[in-house]
Image (cartoon, rainbow, N blue to C red):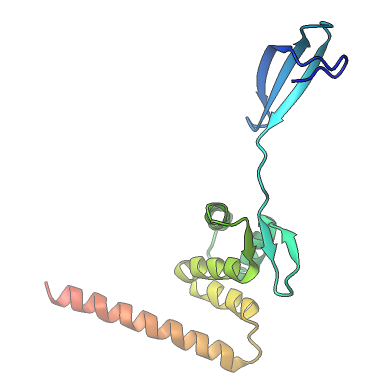
Length: 165
């Protein structure tokens, strides 16, 4: 570490302390040449997630946008803020673990829809209607019929399992 006063490269550490929820290390240092003291802050440098929008423009990932979208879809549904936060956290973690720091917005939308589909069918259809730009009642009915078919298959499998015992 270079001394900010005399530019000497030999410095020592007096004390170190974690701050900002253990995301930053604050170090009190001294210069071995001029003996002046100074403070440094070390933080993990993360490459931010970038969202590629439909028009190919890019913006920094904002988890609040996911939360707002899910809250709208779940309005007047029996879904808690804890569940919404958990979904958002899981999606953000999945995105961070991906091979790229650039993610297409439609991929994020699919992740949200998949989570909502298993949580609440009404919230799922609401979110899908915005995400997929449903333009008429036919689009809604088509999506609802897909859900009904899946539910019917699940019911048939569970009946087969309970009857085959």
